[in-house]
Length: 175
Image 1 (cartoon, rainbow, N blue to C red):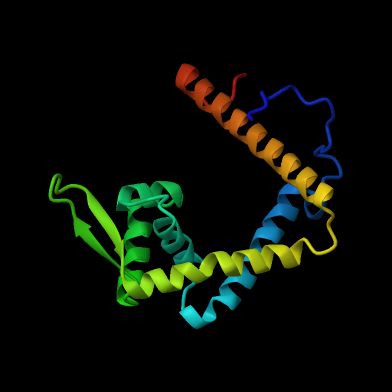
Image 2: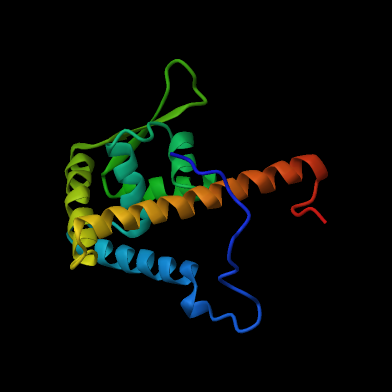
């Protein structure tokens, strides 16, 4: 469910006395960094880095089948995606195959070793996230997810509004 972006009722932050360590963004970034470190540590036996397990899992789970789709869902440019796939291919986890129907399209195919490595990823993600949620009740967990979705929806609405402003005026912010 998407919530329309509303004008803020509260100014939780102001420039005067702003403390980055108390910001929601700072806290979320540190949580994500902690997740990434723990997941990478638990996937050490696969020799996958954080930058590598994410695209491998996206292909495994069917979220992307081509290089272009994978770059889009991983929020990477074509060059970064190529380098990542070069590393995954060197590890024998995937291969790129040109489409017979359209030579511009490059499909990504997991090798048997790639499927085995990717199959372990959801187990690791579940362990890491469950450990981070230790002590939360089911109700607190559901509330947390609702709050995070609201933040995500607000950010998407702000990005959409910014893109619309840029399209209309050519500048990022209305004066």
